Figure 1 (cartoon, protein in one colour):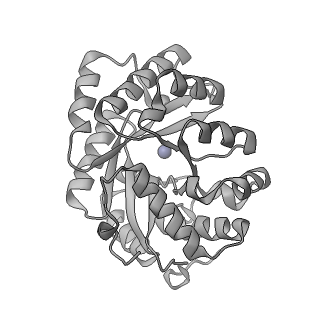
Figure 2: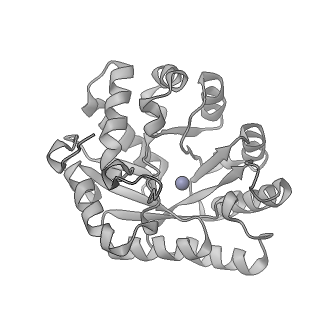
Figure 3: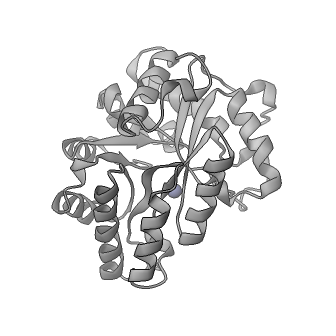
Length: 276
Ligand SMILES: [Zn+2]
């Protein structure tokens, strides 16, 4: 695929990339990445932390860049031990930084080499409690862990702050259970290729969907043009528009309004840089 910048698909209404790991890109790559995002009319990128160090980086990015806000949280696959008092204190401090708008990324990851399940569940419960303490919506990661994820979100009353089920790839039955919790469904590029996900997405009301790219440097992709970046977000919006039989601007308006609603007024539409 030849993807010259002139081929960037864009929306006339600003989009919100609700989940990206842009702190993990080389500093020299960041300005061109943000310029490509702006050309695609991505009005805001939420940079998600995965470790304490990464949380500090996303908070600094949010301080420096008007089109970036931060989520703080610890990714389950990156946990290196039980979540102790010092880490909790640091998370509490970070959660109060001015650019932080959500608790992200946290969740459960039951892959063979992931940390022990009890350790993950403990860290996840504690983070849901922190999110509630600070009134921040939760953006959650669930890999092979959907039942435990749903149960803990329910038990810890995550619905009180709401949030989004990040990188949703399930079918309609799972989507319905996520919606019942009061969460949004966050769709990314798997929507372009997974038939079951496409069938589910066509049935999920547009006022319950947000979109994201989950961008991070993908060193296994030799051609940098093929690496997922925030400027790919209109591809997700366009696919969703096709599935709902509406135009892409309808999807852009809905998903952006949904995200702003989820953030509970922490970001206004005027901050997205273009008329909505
Ligand atoms: Zn992520």
